[in-house]
Amino acid sequence: MKKKLGLLYGGKSAEHDVSLSTARAVTQALNFDKFDVFPIFITRDGEWRKGDQLTAPVESIEQLQLGKGTQDSIPNDVSSFLLNKDEKEFDVIFPLLHGTNGEDGTVQGLLEVLNLPYVGNGVLASSAGMDKVVMKQLFEHAGLKQVPYVYFIRKEWNKNQDALIAKMEEELTWPMFVKPANLGSSVGISKASNREELIKAIDLASKYDRKIIVETGIVAREVEMGVLGNDSPKVSVPGEIKPVTDFYDYDSKYNDNNTGLIIPAPVTTDVVERMKDMAIRAFKVLDCSGLVRADFFVTAEDDIVINEVNTMPGFTPVSMYPILWQNTGVTYSDLIEQLIDLAIERHEEKQQLQYQ
Image: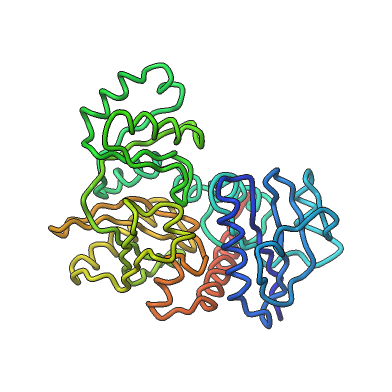
């Protein structure tokens, strides 16, 4: 029996375009002999649109941008939209949403309430993984080594700019990296080497989120690992990123084919084992499920610092997560099928819970 799969993509997010690229790539890897695939597009304005069943891979992003007049377009009644009693309910939803209103636990909460199986992390892991400050606080609880950081909200910055700058200069060292706390794909991230650049970077980050995090820059190699599973996760080979820019920014991730990826990363067996241990500890402390990409810094002295985890890493052709698993022996298609199986496994386990 073919499974009915809903691909959920787009969304009200600064990473809307990234989501479209991910959705196209996933359609190109799906086995259409195993799945009945339905596109579910969320516009930039938050309107949900379900298109006709896909029978072949999508070749262009424009095909995914479903216009008005598609099969369904129901902005205010998503429950009936997803639970159409006139036809078979979805066997599983694959959220290919990045950033706010998708990767942050909001859509996951909706799918939980509707009791629909879905790929990837649950509400807690998604929301905690999205908020870099909460994530770092949980990592600290788990004893995972991190770079020093300072965080604050936009109103504090507007009221106490001089005091916050003094705090950052006291607790951190130059250069500093400024980030919106609740965004991914390096959107809104800047490197600052002095006060003037710091102020400009914070003003930019505050356009994307009310909470800002500023971290000490570190001279180190950027190494990433993929984590796959539910209660017994497994870890991929490590991959090193060699960006041509100062850091692995948005263009490096999605537009620049010159960014170097070294897989497996040239690190010692001891470093690999320590990163694996840290990746699994990070996965478990956030109560993750399905997939996570764990990002590390490795110094010249082989000291390891965890930077962050991404609970919905991209699936574009140049994305690190699927490439890591390809180099670990799991093809793109097999990876997607494993994620779908893990989603159904987790959902079936939840159905065993008693509620009275």
